[in-house]
Every structure is written in structure tokens, then in C-alpha cells.
Amino acid sequence: NVRPFNEMPGLWKSSIANLYNFWKQDGFQNIHRIMLHNFNTFGPIYREKIGYYESVNIIRPEDAAILFKAEGQYPRRLRVEAWTSYRDYRNRKYGVLLKEGEDWKSNRVILNREVISPKVLGNFVPLLDEVGEDFVARVHKKIERSGQNKWTTDLSQELFKYALESVGSVLYGERFGLLLDYIDPEAQNFIDCISLMFKTTSPMLYIPPALLRRLGAKVWKDHVGAWDGIFNQADRCIQNIYRQLRRDSGARDKYPGVLASLLMLDRLSIEDIKASVTELMAGGVDTTSITLLWTLYELARHPALQEELRAEITAARAASRGDMVEMLKMVPLVKGALKETLRLHPVAVSLQRYITEDIIIQNYHIPSGTLVQLGLYAMGRDHRIFPRPEQYLPSRWLRSENHYFKSLGFGFGPRQCLGRRIAETEMQLFLIHMLENFRFEKQRQVEVRSTFELILLPEKPIMLTIKPL
Ligand code: HEM
Ligand code: 2DC
Image 1 (cartoon, helix red, strand yellow):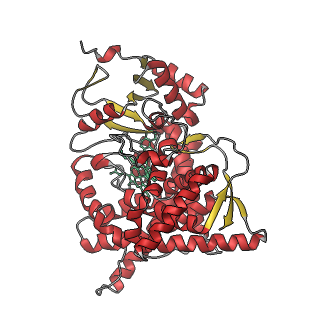
Image 2 (tube, rainbow, N blue to C red; image 1 turned 30 degrees about the horizontal axis):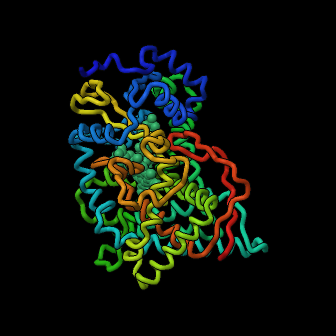
Image 3 (cartoon, protein in one colour; image 1 turned 135 degrees about the horizontal axis):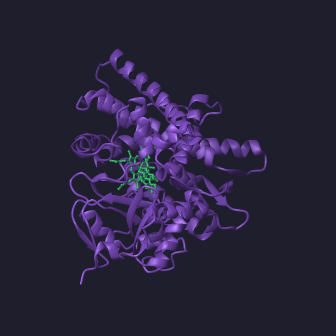
């Protein structure tokens, strides 16, 4: 009694009409709320076609498990045509983000060892800890200068700089110095280019970039300009390290960073290294900074919870006696808070895979080759999956409750986020340092919603008041 693919509910028959309706609903910015609405209308599985983009959408953790079991040896996500088109247009190599098949696997395996394996944590922690301390010093200075013993601000620009400084220090083993008073205009331009790159990608999920390019559309031109800015800046950083390495190739005692490690390892071509390091540098800015901003927003709205976290951190600090790697093992509530942030405010609205075998989900047959999407935003807000989903409760991640396929903010399996360890460590250290030094408050208790600019962002600025403890 398995039902055929063609009986699956949803709007998949008229792709152009759907694109028009999608546009009328402001779909380009609202995809996450539209998905939520679709699950409410059609149930836990539906089929959809908007423009040229066709998918099956699922929401339940047990269905996610079926999906990821059918991802095959070389898992593939939705192909972001805007990104591949730019690389083809400028004749640049794909990095691990865009590669597929054996080429992806062989690069990814080597990158895993330098970027996400547990052994590199010890190298990353001292670098990221220092950036965290510098951020605290910068905030203290801002508070002093205000003359009011507090600082009320939209932290997003500061967080972008923190994130770029962090990922830069890990990739290059060097500091950019973005947390000083003078900000390098090239670094600022890099930050601006990443936001513009994301923003201009989202319409091109539904309208083919090749068409927009032929029409000379502004969105395509802006997109190219943004990637050009990203690649130019990354090229400068990479060249710099490359030259240094050739100059003094002698043995070094200090950890030289991901790029130098990859160059010395000599198992990937220089072009492959450049492509993936550029993607890591670009992927490391908006993702962690926005997640931290949402976390501070939630903590400002929940003062008692903020105290609980602070108490956990104080105890961990004492017990670990200056060993930061140890300390990070003693802050489960801090980690729970970050998971809770990604539940309510995921960076990625969905996870997707092209399945490599036929599967049955919710009693529907789905043929091999279909693009299946797990609605991550919708899942995080479903009361059948997370009781009282509207409440920010980091402790729900502590209880020996069942977390089977529920914590998916970084994706899953061999194709999960390559920057995951960097991101987690950088965010944990940020919260540790900031909560040890400051209290966070929020003026008006209005709900801030998300907007979709390829990643999910706060719809409007989040104003926070920071006070020294
Ligand atoms: C892929 C989320 C930070 C680099 C992904 C994916 C997700 C994700 C959901 C797709 C995974 C999948 O399909 O299973 C996040 C979140 C972050 C974050 C929530 C922070 C809060 C970062 C950082 C970097 C990074 C800091 C770089 C240092 C990448 C790369 C991929 C990726 C290169 C593609 C991996 C591949 O295709 O093999 N990320 N990310 N991300 N992310 Fe992240
Ligand atoms: C966006 O429908 C919505 O981590 C689409 O650090 C499906 C889709 C496909 C790929 C996803 C993307 C969504 C959101 C942003 C992600 C991306 C894969 C990697 C990327 C999740 C869900 C991101 C932000 C990377 C970006 C690295 C890049 C800048 C070099």
C-alpha cells in the first residue's frame, strides 16, 4: 500500500505559476515561513516546484534518518548554480563546497584531517582564545569611551570582524588585527562582499544565472563583483603565506595554520588548496557572527538563564585551572545554548540531498535521484518534535532525552559543515569570555524575525545593551 510519487501532495505541477505566486508572497525573503506554511497545509511531506527547482520536503527526524541513509558515497546537496556559474565564468576551480564525486571525496578527506578532526582542536583553541580576549578588551574600551558605563549597540559589524579575525587566525596562523581601532578597508570590503554575495544568490536559486547573465541583470553583475572582491582578498592572504613559507621553510615550533599545513602536506594541488581555503574564509564570517548575535539576543531576553550560564562558566574556569581545552569540556549548557540558537535561528533553512536509491518516506515512494529537503527551520519550530518550541531552553539538550536526528544545524555525515569545529570552538570561547565580563540587556521585548538572504538573518538590527559585571 505504498503510494506512488505522483500522488504526493504539494504544488509541483505548474512551475511558472508557482514561481509567480512565490514572488507575490515575497518568497525570496520568506522561504522559511512559506515552508512552515506548506507543512501545515500538506502535512509532513510535500512536493514542490518553483522555477527550475524541484524537491520533496520532509520535516520529521525519523524521515531525516531515512534520507541520510540514502545519500550514497558522494553526498550531493542542491547545486547552487550562482556559485558554480561564477567559477565557470571566471575560470576558477571549485573547492570542497562545490565539488562532487570522487574529486570532492579525495579533497574532503585531506581537509578533514586539517580542519575538523579532533586532533586539531588543541591547535585552534589557543588562537581562538586570544581573539576572544581581544574582543573583550575592545568592548571594555567602547564602554569606557561611552562615559555611561554601558554600551548600547547593534553588534553585527563587530561580530563580523570577530568572526573574520577568528577564521583568519586559524587559516593563516596570523592575526589580521581587525579588533584594533583602525579597520583595514580591504578587510571591511571583504566582509561587505560576503553579505552581498549571499543576498544576490537567493533570487538565482529560482531564476537561472545563465539567463540573468545574458540579460545583463544587475543581480548577476553584483554577484560577480562580490565574488571578485572575496577571491581577490583571499588571494592576497594566501599569496602572503605562500611567500613566507618559501622564504623560511625551516622547522617551526608554533602551529602555522591550516593553509601552511596543507601546503607543507603537499597532497592537494595549490589550486585546490586555494579554492577550498577561499571557501573556508568566506564561509567563516556571516555564519558564526549571526549565530552569536541571535544567542546574545536570547540571553538578553532571559536574564536568569544568562546567570545560569555564567555560573557554569565560573565553575568550569576554576576546575580547569587555565587549560582551555579542558574547560570546553565542562560547559554543556553553553553548548546547549548554541544548539538551541540553531534550532530557532538556523543558518541554513534546509538540508538537502539527491538520494542515490529509491526510498519510502511517510508511505510515499521517492525515486532515486530526487532532491529531498529537510526543512530545518520548520523542524525546529514544530511542537510535535520540540515540546514548547517557542521557548529558548538550552537545557533541553542536556536531558538524557532522545536527540536522534534533531541536532542538525551543521548538517550530517561526511558532507556536513567542514567549518564545524572552528565554528563551535570560536562560538563557545566567545560566550565564555563575554559572559565572564559583561551582562547583556535588551530594551523593548519585541520579537525579531528572520529574513532569508540565502542564509537566515535577523530581519532588523538587534540593539543590545552591554554592561560590565
Ligand atoms: C557546509 C552550517 C560555519 C564552511 C555547511 C552546511 C551547513 C552549514 C548546514 C551544509 C551541510 C550539509 O549539507 O550536510 C553552518 C553553521 C555554521 C557554519 C550553522 C556556524 C554557526 C561555517 C564556518 C565555515 C564553514 C565557520 C568555515 C570555516 C563550510 C563549508 C561547507 C559548509 C566549506 C561545505 C562542505 C562540503 O560541501 O563538503 N555549513 N556552517 N561553515 N560549511 Fe558551514
Ligand atoms: C539555502 O534552498 C536555501 O554553510 C536553498 O558556509 C538550499 C541551500 C543550499 C546550500 C546551503 C544554503 C541553502 C544555505 C547556506 C549554506 C549552503 C551550503 C553551505 C552554505 C548552508 C540551505 C554555508 C553558509 C557555507 C557557505 C560557504 C561559502 C560562502 C563559501
